[in-house]
Image (cartoon, rainbow, N blue to C red):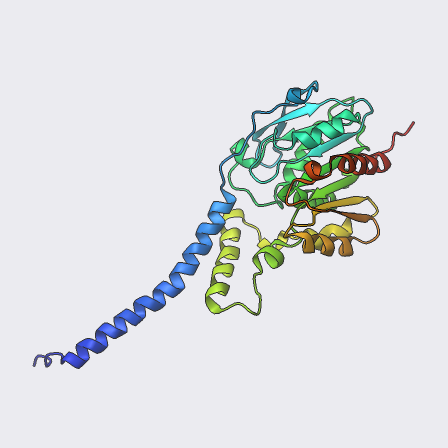
Length: 305
């Protein structure tokens, strides 16, 4: 016996139910898709290499190649020889190349420091970024290279990093005791809590879904938890090696800098550059920047003689 034909009321109810289901699916699916797209895009930016070389600043330099211990990949770099045996590693910020922070390298080189810069993972064709945690491996690769040079004292190696490389610098110093001093500029304190705010109790369900999809996507792409992106959690392990944190007064990550200083204790200093935003510390206060950074490394990496 065939079913009776649907009444207009039943057809209306079915359409309403279907529409409601589509709305619910969209409300769940769109934040989740946006979370994945956000994370994928953030971890796969194009290489932003600069054609600038140390020679453009008047320095003698060498084109070098680092070997990635984890993958065997080749990473292009610049090496500026120094005059006193001390060396400073400048990791690339985000997807930058070996020429990304040469204005800072110039300051160091003019005071006799050897400087090593190198390409980011994106410029070296090594796949996704991790935003600072796994990039500590490339700092270790730079240390391996410096240990092969007779003109470098392995006990006098420091690091200067900006933005994500500032976070890398703190995490590298915590894991690599060969880093004797670190200057970290404008990095995040805790990416998940500070910049993304995963798990904020005030989030509405859709915002919470978006943030948790970011965390899940990060784990799927990198194999690590986004909670590892926390210099604040590890900065206390660096003592008694000295730390100089440099941030601008107009920088959104300044609260993270204060949290890091508190967690680090007495061996960390924080210089807030009045009027500076993200990354223009040297341009805003060139004389004071040079004086502070050079005095910091001179005290932290003294000549044994």
